[in-house]
Length: 135
Image 1 (cartoon, rainbow, N blue to C red):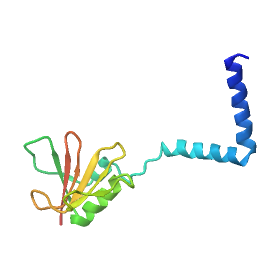
Image 2 (image 1 turned 180 degrees about the vertical axis):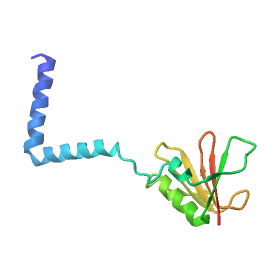
Image 3 (image 1 turned 135 degrees about the horizontal axis):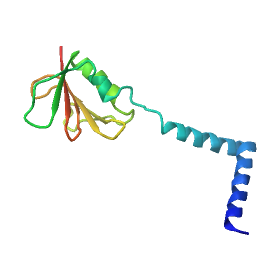
Image 4 (image 1 turned 120 degrees about the vertical axis):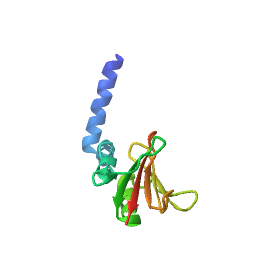
């Protein structure tokens, strides 16, 4: 029997098992859920959405872009939580903040102080984005 015919018969048998047996239906449902999960965005907000109500900050000497928002530490924590993928959060090694990952794998951190003393969310692209939070 040719290989193509064997594969067609196997596919037909798998289809019958999937439709008419509890295990087959469970496997099909699980596969469908995994396919659906690939298209679901788990983070609540994108970087652009977080920056929508921010104003440009001072120019830096390096590649970083700075932005300013109000709300202090509470807003910084909320924006960080909205940006990261659930389950990616860990404490910073120095214990002064948290780090996580964007859906694309980019590292993000939130810390209670920065070089100018304000709470900061830092998105660590090749050209970093730093959002400073005033009161």
